[in-house]
Every structure is written in structure tokens, then in C-alpha cells.
Length: 211
Image (tube, rainbow, N blue to C red):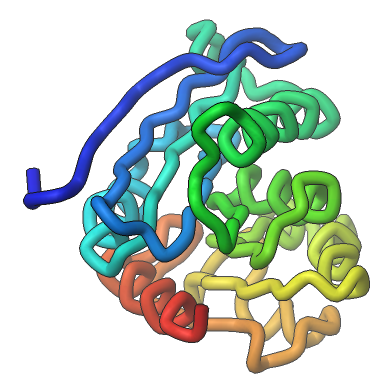
């Protein structure tokens, strides 16, 4: 472990059951990035794990969140309202508890986790939303757009940045801009819905450099 970086894993009670958070905290943190996982994965996916490993080198505390359904060993993700109901108290504990993590607070995640971050951005008082592999629509169903979730945070004046694989079947970068996302809010990386983890790290570092 690099000098000055501490790690902690703990459970936080939520209305949906306990959520697991794994924190990597540099000695002097410039802010905190909270990342949730997708509907089919865990918080140790390649891109999230790489962010957790390397962003503390830049001075960012990183918290990986495993939703209660995953902690309980279930194979099917909870419905969106239940994901939100678990995410909000986790953020409240991390930033309003007895030992609050430093701000600015970057609320993010990949896929379903990105949707949660967008929907809850105002409630958790996020300073920035980081949406990785945002699932604009189910594969093959572009008429079932979820763009309103992304746009909702933007319309509230909350900064949003999206990192998207160039061939993502859940929505390409071109589809996101066609839906209304401003191009300067978007970073394109190689890959599909599981994009190149190294390029995701580089894109996120570029985004966070302004914070």
C-alpha cells in the first residue's frame, strides 16, 4: 500500500439493509469520490477498482459502495427506488457522520450506479456527478430512453460529467449528444459497456483536475 493511504471496510445501515463501503483515504485528501456499481456487478469491477487504486495518489479519497442487495448475496439487483433509498443514507453517514469525509463530494458510479448518482445528486448535495457507462437505454431499445435522469441533475445546476465507451450498446457517445448532452460534458473512451479501464482512469483524472 502506498505511504500515507489508509484503507477501511465497514457496513452502513440503510432502510434496504446494510451496505458495504470500502474507503481508500490519502493522508491529506482534496475531496472524495463515492462510486456505486452496476446492476450486474460489484464495486470491484475493473474500472472502479482502478479508480480506487490510483485516484488516492492524486489526493482523492475513494469510497466503493456495494449495495445492500449485493451484500445480501442476491443475484438480481433491487429496483431503482430501492437503490436510491440505500444510497442516500450512505452518503449522509459518510459526509455528515462523526468523522465526515472531505469535500468536494463527487457522487458517481458505473451503469446503474451512474443512474443512482444522477437521481440522488440534489438530495445528497453532490458537488459533481461522475457517470461512467451511463445506460441511456436497454440494448436494442433506443426508444426507452433514460436521458431524463441525466438531464435532471444538469437542469438543477449540478455539474455532470459522463465517461462513455465508444461502442456501448446501452448508448453510444453520439446517442448521448443526440439526446441533448452537451459535448463538453462527455469523455469518450475505447470499448463497450465495459470500457478500457486505463482510459477511464485517464478521463476521470482529466475531469477531476479541474476540482
